[in-house]
Length: 136
Image (cartoon, rainbow, N blue to C red; front, side, top):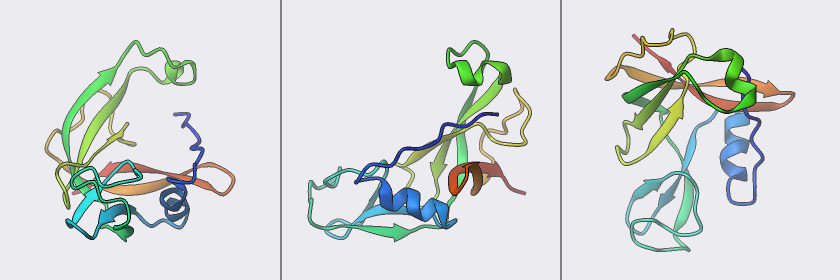
């Protein structure tokens, strides 16, 4: 399935640099001990802007819900329809969600509640993206 190649800005560059090293990092607020994604200039929980750091996390989660895209409008994804779109809830912070097409899982067979872990896929020379794969 064709993937969108990320274009990092100043705020997201540390995240994408880590992905390219096959590391999974999220912003962490040292003032209130909260993780957040996507990256922001200040903490979503307490508003602190000078207490954000990047923290490596395990990259494990669960499939919270899933739908099947049958009639999407993205030209580059039309040939791959139908495909899964799953919402992944991060185990380390259940307020953080990611979306994935679940590589290797046939459409209509996404196991809601199943454990997943982050994997990395090359989408261009020297550019990886993060995806989520069912484990176990």
